[in-house]
Amino acid sequence: MKYDEVLEKIESGSISAEEAFDELFPIKKAKPGKRATFIKMNVQVPDESKGLNTFLKILFALPIPMVFARLGLRLGKRFAKLEDEDVDFDQIMQLLKYSRHTKIQVESEEAVVDIKII
Image 1 (tube, rainbow, N blue to C red):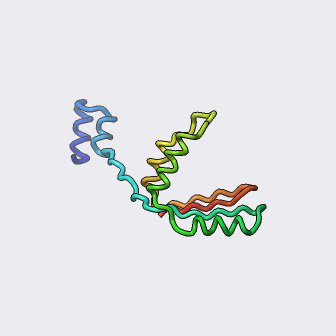
Image 2: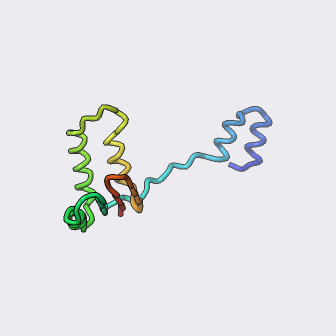
Image 3: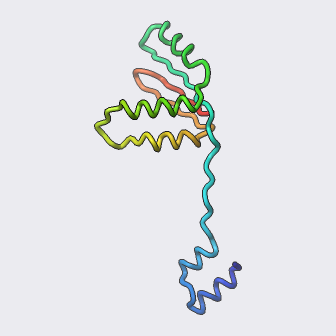
């Protein structure tokens, strides 16, 4: 619909300003992001021995398929005893599904975790 036609409808009183705005600028559906296939992790524990850090590097040397990551979240949901009900595992699984090219870095006193979703 053209701009002039919408202005004429407003002038005649057949539509309101909000309806005219909706006609001129329709809401487009957001496309989901690209599907993730793997998760690459790097975990370092600075206060522990070199052997533990080497073991963690070997354990997470290969990317983890997204199927196993989602399976782990389902198992975690089953066994997690959360006092706060703020964590929604189903929403986390849905976000992971379409989060390709996302990088997450967590640094604390106990460990440093780098997660890349590819």
